[in-house]
Image 1 (cartoon, rainbow, N blue to C red):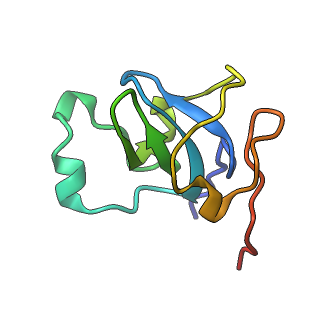
Image 2: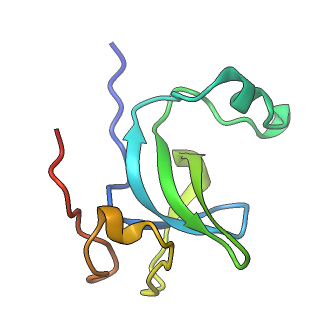
Length: 108
């Protein structure tokens, strides 16, 4: 049985190690849970292991807001203290407090 512990938590602000974007975690998969087409589109020499947590982010860069799916190895915690401005944040989270966003809905 695979036992995986996520390093990051819901509502935490993180940034990508290689690409210039940051975001707020709104869901976590214990292991890869996206399509093979998505995974195969990543250059082979950059593909992360599927056997690690993957995070769903409300992401933003200088030009866009979007949803990103990122492996744990490609994330780092964002300690800038700057809020994320993704327009969907209020649907899931409360106001930015002490570097993260509190959940505003009941989890199953």
